[in-house]
Image (cartoon, rainbow, N blue to C red):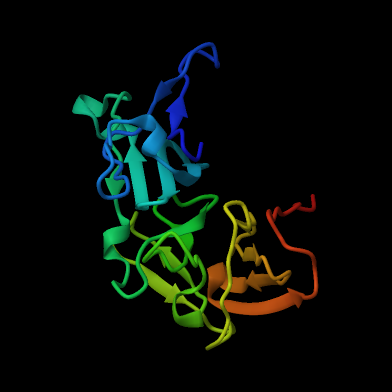
Amino acid sequence: MSGGGVHESRDAGRSWAPLIKGLEVVAGLDAGTVAFHDPHCVRLCPSNPDRLYQQNHCGIYRLDRSEGPCGDPSADTWKRIGRKMPKRVGDIGFPMVVHPRDADTAWVFPMDGTTVWPRTSPDGRPAAYVTRNAGRTWQRLDQGLPESQAWWTLKRQAMTVDAQATPALYLGTTSGELWIGRDEGARWSNIARHLPEIYAVEVVERT
């Protein structure tokens, strides 16, 4: 919850507890105060439910339950993996997407996080970034996307991935454009324009 941090329940929702250890907050605020935390998007890995990723107001994080003592499932410390992003781009944004079958692969769409606003593509050059090793390195994916003057904003749920053998990414902008990134985001193309502001994107798989 924005302004409420990440919470978890281990008893089917009868009770909840904060899950904020290791997360940073805005400078000058107390990281121990739950209300100062602002998770933008939390994703559980379909192929490994013990791993979670988070795109946060203060960076990109990963949590591995299996890394506790002797594989203790109570491991509760988030690791900031966004520090490996290019410094000029940073690791602030809203959406986060995880590969349907590979827990080491995840995508983000960074936005200008130097201040609270503007939250648009850094330098007006939009791009997705992918990690294929759980955050140790990141690769820019911008082939087919505008090269300049594209001050995009993507909301928390406005990027997703399908479950095909070679997944494609999909994203929607607040300016009403819908894009597809084929080959796991390697090749982008526009599939719709002049739509209302897009807040969420989902994929329906044909069977």
